[in-house]
Amino acid sequence: MARSDHLSSEKRARNRPVPHDVAMAVRFMRQNMGHKNSMGDLAAYCGVAERTLRKHFHGFMAVSAFEYWRRLRFSAAREHLLKGTSDTSVTMVATRFGFDHFGRFSQQYRRCFGETPSATLRRSRVAELSRTTRIPEDATQDAGAFAVVASPPRGKASVAILPCQVGAGESEHRSFGECLADGIGTALARVHSLSVLFPRSWQSIRSYDLKRLCRECGAQYFVIGRILQVGKRIRIIIRLLETASGAQIWGDSYDGEANDLLRLQDHVTEGVVRGILPAIRGVEIERARRKRPEDLDAYDLTMRALPFVFASNPSASGQALDLLNHALEIEPDYAFSTALAGLCHAQLAVHNGTDSPMKEKQRALLLAERAAILDPDDSQVLIARCAVHTIAGQFDVASSLIGRALALDPSSAWAWERSGWVKTFAGEPETGLVHLRRAIRLDPFSPSNANRLVGLGCAYFDAGRYDRAAYLMRQALREQPSTAWVNRTLSVAFARLGDRLAALDSLKALQRYSPDLTIGQVMASLPFPQDFMERVAEGLNDLGLPA
Image 1 (cartoon, helix red, strand yellow):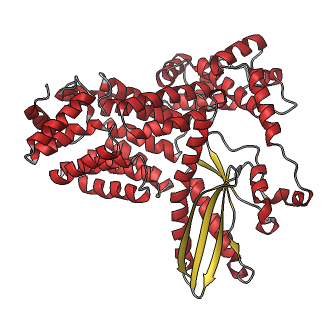
Image 2 (image 1 turned 30 degrees about the vertical axis):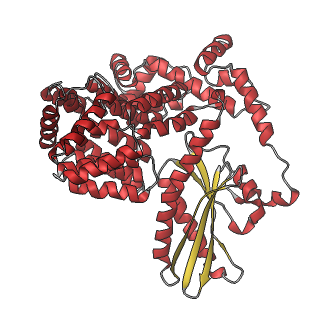
Image 3 (image 1 turned 180 degrees about the vertical axis):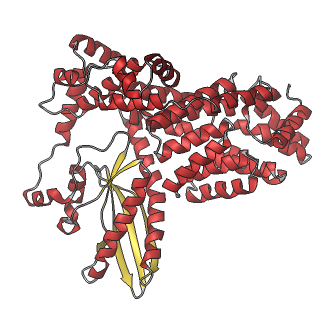
C-alpha cells in the first residue's frame, strides 16, 4: 500500500467522531440490567436520535444496541449463578435480569456458555460446599477485623494489605508498620488491576488466623511483613502469600536508616508494587491454565491469553484472539479483553502476519476506542491502547495514554516498554533507549524482554549504530526465536556493517517466516520515521527482497 494511502487511513481514524452517546448507552445498560426499556428510552437518555445511536453503536461495538444489552444481561446472569447459594434459583435469576421466557433463556444461555443455567448453579453450590469449613470458636471474635466483601470486582485479583509485625520490644515501630501498609495499599489501588483490602484493627488479628480472615474477606492474596532494628539500621521483610494454600509466591527485604523512615517507606513501597503485580499475574495465569474449560470465565480466558499476547508473533496473536473473543462473548463489556484484542490485531499488522495491515490497524483502533468507552482509567487498558495507537502511527495519542498509565503505575515495566517504543517509532531513539532499558531493569526475567531488546536494536539502528543494533536483535532472536520479523531490520544492519553473508542469511530467515513478503508490505507495516524506512527499503532491495 502506498505511503499516502497509509497516511490518509490514519487521518480518517483520527477524525472519527468521539461516540459520547455510545459511552452513555453502555452506562445506561449497566444500570438497567433487569429493566424493560425501548430504543426510544435509550436514545432519550443519550440525547440523540434513535437512528444516530443505532449507527454509532453498531459502528463502535460491531453489534446492535439491544444485542449488546442482551449479552450484558446474560453475562450478569451467569455471574449471579456462579455466586449462587441454596436460596438461588434459575427462575429467580432469569427474572431478575429481564428474561421472561425461561425455556428460551435456558437454550440461549447454553449456546452462549456451553452449559445450562442449572448446571452452572449446581457447580456453584458444589464449589461453595467444598470451600465451607468449620470456624474455630476462638476465631469468631476476629471476624470483624476486615471490611468484608462478597467477592472481588470482576476481572481483578484481590489482595489484603496487613501492617508489618514488630517484636515485643519494638512497639515504637507499630505505627510505622501501619503507615507502610497504607502506602503500599494506596499505590497498588492506583493500578486498578487489583482489589485492595485493609484490616480494620491489626491488634485483633492473631497470626494463626490470618489465612482464615483473608479468605473470609474475599482476599485471594495477602501481604505481610516484619520490621527488625539493629542499632540505627532497620530491615523490613515483606512477603506475598496465596490465601488458599498459604504458599509464599514473592518476597523481598529492604534496609534503611532508622532516622530516615520516609525514604525507607518510599523504597519499600516502590519495590513491593514492582514485585507483587507480576507475581500475582503469574499465579493467575497458571490458575486459569489449570481450570477445566467449563469453569473458565472472561477473566480466566484473558489470563490464558496474556502469554500469547506478549509472545509478539502472528501465530501467538491469533491464539490470543481466539481466547479473547471467547472472553468477550461471555463479558462483552470487559475493557481489558477488548484492549488486548485490539493490541493483537495491531501486532498482526506490524509483524506482517496479515495481507491487510491497514484493515488490521483499523480493527485495532476500533477496539481501542471501545476499551476507552468501557474503562478509560485502568492502567493496563491504557498501556494496551497506547500500543495500538503507536503501531497506527498516532504518536501524540499514544504519548498521552502512556503518560496517564505511568502516572498511575510508575513501576510498570510494560508501561516503560511501550513508552520506549513510542519514542523509538517517533524518531527519539535516545529517549527510547532510556525507557526500554528501564523496563528491562524493572522486570529482568520477563518473556517480553525479547521485544524490548528489539526496541533497543531499532533505536540504535535509527541512530546509525548498526553494530549495537545487530547485537541486540540477535540476542532477541536467541531469547525468542519466534520473533523472526526482526530480520526485516537485522538483515539491513548486517548489510550496513559490510557482512553480506550474514545479511543474506538473515533475509532467508525472514523469507522462511513470511515467504511472500515484499518491501511494500514491510513499508506499510512499520511506523518508523521516513529516513529509517528509506534505509530499510534500500537495504532490502539491495539484498533482493521483491518490491
